[in-house]
Length: 207
Ligand SMILES: [Fe+2]
Ligand SMILES: [Fe+2]
Image (cartoon, rainbow, N blue to C red; front, side, top):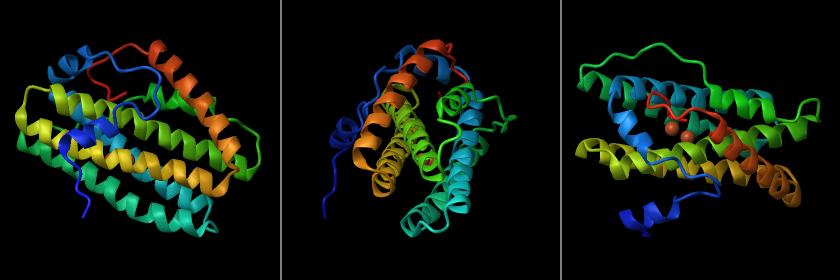
């Protein structure tokens, strides 16, 4: 069996093509109020599960997509439950859902009025990008947060979300011409870096 060492896992997910690394001070901001960052994280996991359900509902004829995303729904919901458990363990409460400016800006970048297949590409690339940025941030948390238990805890999320990032990109390539995927992915990466610069760095947000 090919078991990756912790170092290999960390190296493999370093940037995932992202153009702008997160300001390392973000971890210090996030760990100042765990209830806030865990609440935001919890809803990110919920939204990830919902996005997969909604893709399955929209493209039931794409068997590979249905087959691959069905277990991810369960996995993301499992992640949501892991966050709930962590909140409980620490005597913290799940707060209310916040406006997700990062995701809203990415959604605004999606091409509107295109064909159904083109819309699929937009949705898959958006999902891949959110996974990539989440993974980059989980990596930072796993390396730099002071709480030793949380280091390990965030490492698990990092590995899982890296797998999802690859899956969404593979699905994009399975259903859309590769040169088109590559071109549009480049545009998304560019836009994502701009969005990161536009957004205020906040310790109560995963993105
Ligand atoms: Fe997740
Ligand atoms: Fe994910």
